[in-house]
Amino acid sequence: MKPIIIGIFATLFVLLAGIAQAKTRIVVTYPYIESLVKQIAPDQVDITTLAKGDEDPHFVVPRPSFIGKLRKADLLIINGGSLEIGFVPPLIRQANNPKIMPGAQGFIDLSQQINLIDKPSKVSRAEGDIHPEGNPHFILDWHNVPALARAITEALARTDPSNAATYRKNLATLLAKWKDRSAAWDKKVLVLRGKKVIQYHRLFNYFVDRAGMQVVGELEPKPGIPPTSRHLEELIQANAGGKVHMIATDAYHERKSPEGVAQKLKVPWRVWPHDVEAVPAAKDIFSFYDALIAGSLP
Amino acid sequence: MIDVLFSAFLLSVVLLGIHSYYGLHIIERGIIFTDLGIGQMAAFGAAIAILVFDGKYMYAVSLVFSLLGALLIAVSTKRTRHHEAFIGLLYAFGMSAAVIALSRAPRGAEQMEHLIAADILFVPMHEVFKTAILYSAIGMVLWFGMKRLRGTWKDVLFFSTFSLTVTSSVNLAGVLVVFSILVAPAYIMSGTGLSFRGKLLGAWGLGMGLNLIAITASYFLDLPTGHTVVALYAFSGMVFTLVRGTGKPRAGGTAEPATS
Image (cartoon, rainbow over all chains, first blue to last red; front, side, top):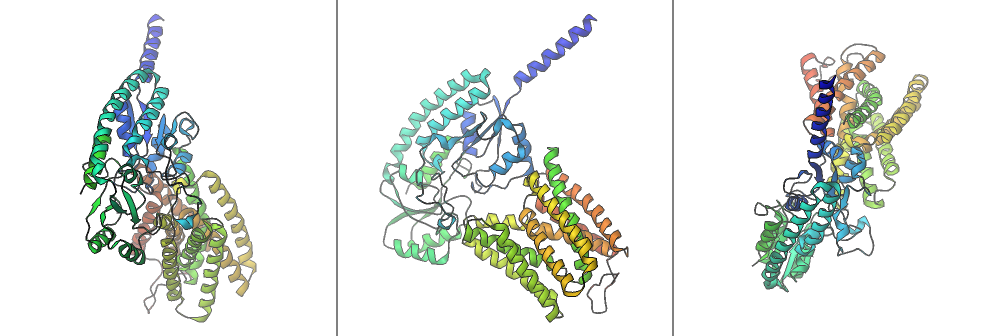
């Protein structure tokens, strides 16, 4: 009888130890969130990222495996601000996991931490793909990162209390490092003050504001609507003598329109990263801003 | 995961149930592309609803356009011998008109993709049930109506319920998914020489097998579900036709169903 009881207890112990050791499962929507999570929890969590860095963040093709990942997730961290409106709501619905439903402890919407800019006065599809909450591409400003890192740390600590101290310590390290790097980036972009840029989509507004630059036009006639020849012609006419610094496009749009407009205006055009992994140089949250600034300098 | 796969499978079975009935009739009438034409008109209607009404009244606008498409096809069959050409033109018109409409709508490319082949893994269970109830009702009306009615009234019943069905299905699953489910099993069965009832049962059995394979494959290989269904149906239809043949070719070269 005794060996059986001992056996049962041993099995239970191993099982419990296994549960305690099981990594927290996190699903995030974009690579920059993954990079931030890894700064705070380098090897305590099991992380899945839905979108690729060079993919259109508004339009991520949902694959069947995403449902499975969300089903097992302890924590879902999204950008928010309607950026994922096209693919996350159906995934959450089909995954049917109470832990990560909006409103649950395991659902984190990072846009809640940020005061969004470009809030539309009226929302209508006729005005293009306007996000009612404001411009959701807030990751383009490095000064938004500390607030995001804090929110992620708190979420991780709540989900996995056993490692909370480690997460908070890593956060402190990250924030200290961030202070130095931010100051360096702020200094680097000083030369950009007052420069005029044309962008493909309203993707880089936070960066442009931070650098004190000015957006003088978009290749898209309205957000989310592909460039038309008439709109591009008008854009060229309006900026012919206007000393445009450069045309900024992103990793996922076609290159013909920026190239054509750049040629007509005799200014350079560049691909700016909008996320970690959007360009090869943007490997993590630090090199992302390095690559962004490098791409914008004359 | 099994419940998600199951709801997708159930949806494909619901679609199969009614569409293979239409498929057999359409092959018999020799107006095979009717579905693509009407389906594409429904997609055009959905695009108009997205552009003009912010995506509201999608079903109603879609239905109006598909009924219009069906009316045009019904009229054309009386006025021209080569109605397949007419239906082809209608399809091309619906397709480009939808693309033109969506080029003015934000994220048009995404919406277009959805109307062509949607991810049926993401259709919620209550939509599946709603569709099942609607199609069962339509099925009953057809089963009794088609035997009793004659001539124009029969056509009116056929084309109006057909438009209603195609509109619902296109909004759920996309034009190509509906077309392949409608044509492939019916096409394969049309060469068997069975009675109508036998062909219908055969198409159901065959389609269910294909649905099971397509949905399981899309899940385990992580492929877009809608296009996996289309590819498998289309491929099976082609292979079967080349190997066994479906109906003997006429002297003119156009295939004719074996039973007519």
